[in-house]
Image (cartoon, rainbow, N blue to C red; front, side, top):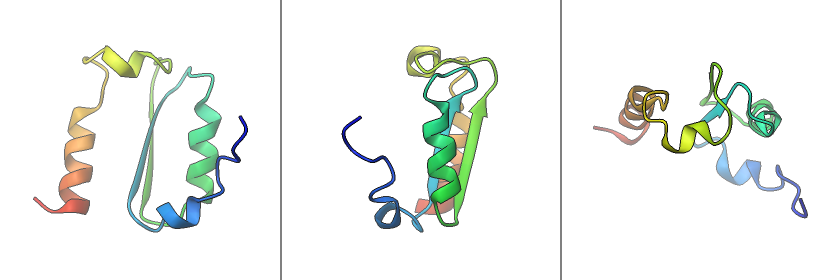
Amino acid sequence: MNLPILTYIAEISPRPILLIHGEKAHSRYFSETAFASAAEPKELMIIPGATHTDLYDQVDIIPFDKLTSFFQEHLGA
């Protein structure tokens, strides 16, 4: 990567941030590093057994309920 991943974390956070990553994703550490650097409110959800691409189209493991509740809480219903 040519861009330091956390260069603009202060511009994103402290706005609510939800990071969702597959447990077996090779890039999982990106979300864990961003989560550690972000201000509250923040949530990190690791999907057991999932790879990075599993969360693109395997609708049975995409956490739609979590997405819905997160956006309802932080954007209003």
